[in-house]
Image 1 (cartoon, rainbow, N blue to C red):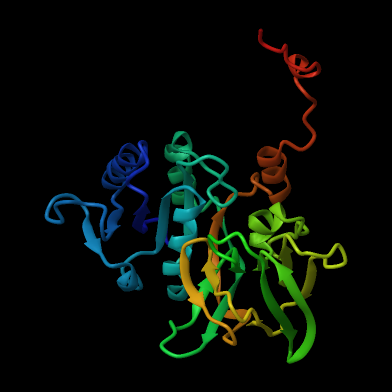
Image 2 (cartoon, rainbow, N blue to C red):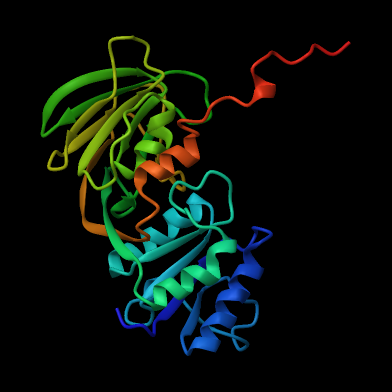
Length: 300
């Protein structure tokens, strides 16, 4: 990429630090001869400041997208930029931030490093999900996971899993997660799934609260094609993609899940290795603080 870039900004403007961070990038870009474009919804007055571009029209108009927010904003930005082959840089305005590793305090230095070419673009696999039924949405793309679960009702659902048309198992429980390696540190981790390096291409299937101890998370090849059939006769299921896109699934309907031909492109820096992120976010290797070595006093 050239040292002079066209930046696109996607942000969760409800975050309290969002506007200040966006203004900083805008000022920096003006001072360095770069251009900035907002995605829709970021500016109340599109005639003032940077231009506003619909996300689906970013291709050819921006060279890099900066996503301000939490991991949810990053996931949304990747779904927009991935099909357009535009790399995405995440700036964390949230809490945990596995995908948005940098903070607004890092912005000046980060932009200088990007100008100097001191970064790399890491490709991550995506999943695509297709619902087979009447009047269903088009292909849904996930960076983290595709979840089929019971929704808000506290009752088990029954799901059948096939891989390459071979029956694997029937599940009775709260649902199933199909995750990418990037998503192995998200919902799949919370239900006991394995942590997989994000550059390894594989598909994780993890049951959610199964009603048998024999069912455990499994790892399938990147080339496998999964099919999940809703076999509950009196219960609907809910399909959620990256925690953001949902639709209801009825008895007998099926979902196919496989690797997408599209790759996500994330802007990364050499010092922020995957293992460093794990140590920082999951507090691996930290000894308990002295004041936590004893149970707290019980209040009167």
